[in-house]
Amino acid sequence: MINRYNHYKTLIFIVLLNVFSSILHYVHNVIHFDHYPEPDWLSPQLVDAFWFVMTPIGIYGLIVAVKSQMTKGRWWLYLYALMGLLSLLHYNIETDNIMTVTMHSLIWFQAICAFWLIAYVTMYFKNKSGH
Image (cartoon, rainbow, N blue to C red; front, side, top):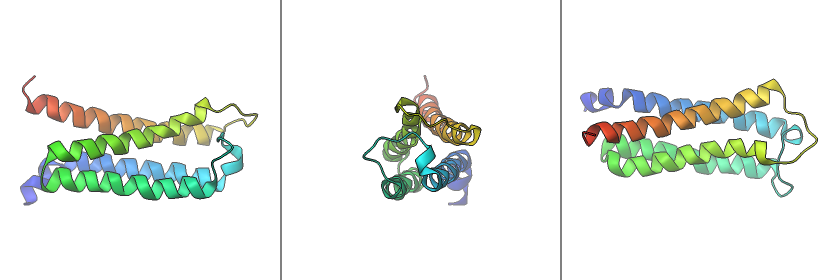
């Protein structure tokens, strides 16, 4: 059992880093909501609620991947990573607000972590299939 976790140490680290990056970005976003570019229909409560939906998906994907089947877990991990990439939509909103360096940094930290998760899971399967 311990060997299985050693095999997945990198995956566990990347998922936990994604959780950490999302905590930083989402907390900052909720606290400074009026300064972020957001669509009119979005509220701090919805941003907060979304984090509580997406994070269990990532944790579930990790648990499934480590405990039983990486094949099943990868789809949950892809979904989680894609949800993390939604932070990039801040750049798609027309606004008069000027984003700070902190805002840009947190958005890109979360996005880079999500891209890393996608790349790692993809490379894991590419290596397993012998390509």
